[in-house]
Length: 122
Image 1 (tube, rainbow, N blue to C red):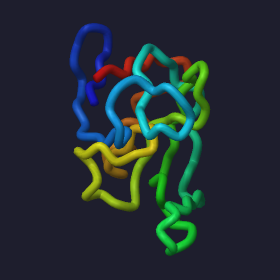
Image 2 (cartoon, rainbow, N blue to C red; image 1 turned 135 degrees about the vertical axis):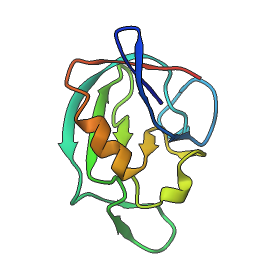
Image 3 (tube, helix red, strand yellow; image 1 turned 30 degrees about the vertical axis):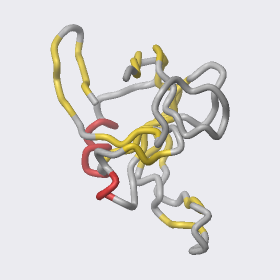
Image 4 (cartoon, one colour; image 1 turned 90 degrees about the horizontal axis):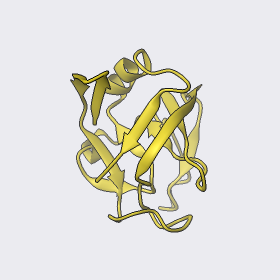
């Protein structure tokens, strides 16, 4: 992930993306949508859980400390979030969101704001 301020590259972060490549076509296709979006809101996700369907039940901390919800017309629930599985960063493993190390997410959270433009490309 590249964070620009104007035309200046300010920071880079390693991320994980959708497990299937290509443009998102339907809910559940495990693709990260590409296009120009905006930050809709930044939510505290510390208490959130997620059931990965692996028989272990809901996983605490699955989204890390924050969920940066993106306004992605046509899709809901897409965002940038942390992880309980740091070894997954740098892979194609998510169900469509952008996943990053929790420490990097803390840094990113201080730099983004609602309404900020986000470009997702392959």
